[in-house]
Structures are given as C-alpha cells and as structure tokens.
Picture 1: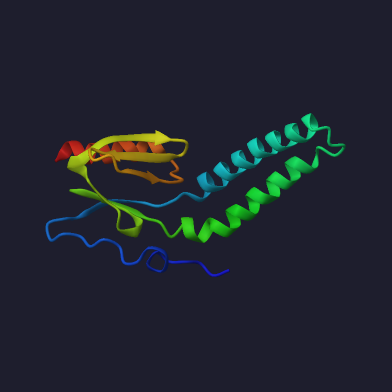
Picture 2: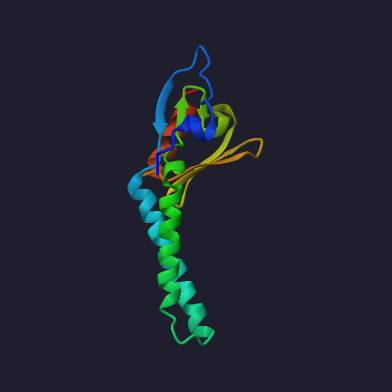
Length: 149
C-alpha cells in the first residue's frame, strides 16, 4: 500500500497570508494512533464477547478475536490517510487539512479530547487535531499563541 501525501487527500494546503508565519505544526503521533486503536479493540472485544455470552453462543471467544481483527484492519487501512493530515499554527490562524481555517481570534474553546485536541470557534465550527502525543501541551501552545495576539 502506497502512502498518501496531503495533496492527494486534501488538496493544496491553505496558503499563508503575507504577514503570517508558521509557529508550529501538529502531526499525528504513531504511538497515540496505535494506542487509540488498541483501546478500541479492547472495548469492542469485551462488548462483543459479552453480547455472545448473553446471547448463549457456545463460542464467545469469537467476539473478541473478531473485534481485534476488525480494528487492526481498520487501523492499517486508514493509517496513510490519517498521517497525511497536518495542522499548522500561525501567528493568526490554525490551518488544517481540507482547507480548514480557524482564526485564533475566533477560538472559543481548545481542550484535550481522548488523545486529540478539540477546537471550537465562536461560529460553532468544530475541529479535531487527532492522535496528539501530548494533547494538553498542544492546547497550551495554541492558547498561548491566541493570548499573544
């Protein structure tokens, strides 16, 4: 499977304005990616196993095995797409994949959210910066730049 690059998935990244500089780049973290999928496999396996036990299935072990295999396949399939995403923090805006733009002046909320960072604007737009190694540090970085304006 060939790796995707950002331009293949999301088109050309949003251009910088003439008075704008990139302060930081937020890319997905591989360890966070696999940890999130391991948690999904564990929870899915428990739920599937319990459902089979409650349903009286004589082979409830099939549920956890199937859940783990399904999540592993999902992780492998989506990996190149997820790792093509990049968020850029500039002195004025957050620029995300697929042309997402969140001006720092319009940020209402930035908070850690299960290994990701949730961004909410005054207009109600919501964005996720997924699979961050240190979501709290990412939030602090974004809010520090917002406060510096």
